[in-house]
Length: 145
Image (cartoon, rainbow, N blue to C red; front, side, top):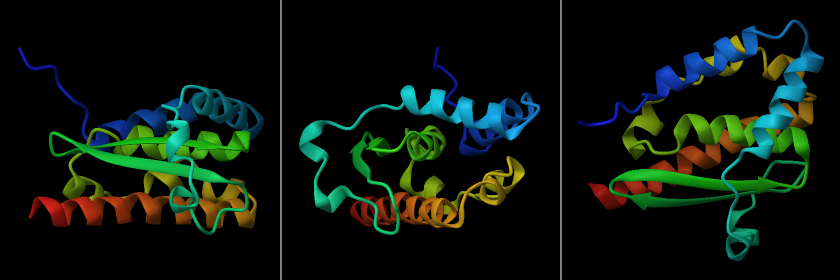
């Protein structure tokens, strides 16, 4: 029997309901830090300047590879909150077809209130991370077409 894989929307809904469990933003930040600790870590050999996300004040490396037409992401960051942010995005997108990633609605970010509770530089970093993950999807989608 095939194991049911969550869609991007289901993963986003899961994340939203996890964030709703916390009363305040201190608890949400702690939760994000915990998510960062569970992040599928990038292989050291991929920690190159090519894999650094431009527009982030802290260093964030992301690596993507296509596996059976699905993108698998690994990442790392030198900042704990940023690592939590990229962990949320990777949890959402990893294991998905590039087209699904490109079509994904990112409004769940607003639903968890992430943008408004980040410093402007982190919020810009978040936008850069989403852009970069979608750029990988574009690149791999072209290979699949």
